[in-house]
Figure 1 (spheres, rainbow, N blue to C red):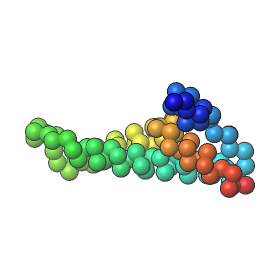
Figure 2: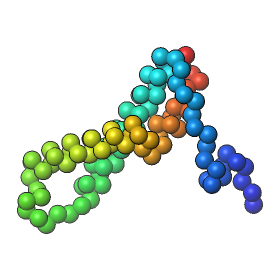
Figure 3: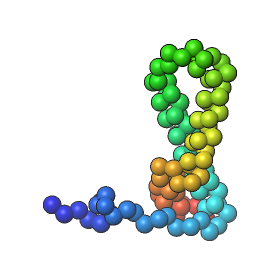
Length: 98
């Protein structure tokens, strides 16, 4: 069985076109922000699954710290490539924005 080039996981998709107009730049930023929010939710749910027996690793201050850390990591990941969600969204939507 052979796969076409666009379905073959070994050959990645072409990078999305660079944003040229102000609207496309705004769309790309919105796509990155959306990816950041999604990654933040993933980090939050992952952190819920971790059981800690250390009494110093519990409390409101630690919860605030972990929330801020997750937000910073998700924003940083989204603006530096992340998991590719922003690029995929932008690739799908860029032709609709002038």
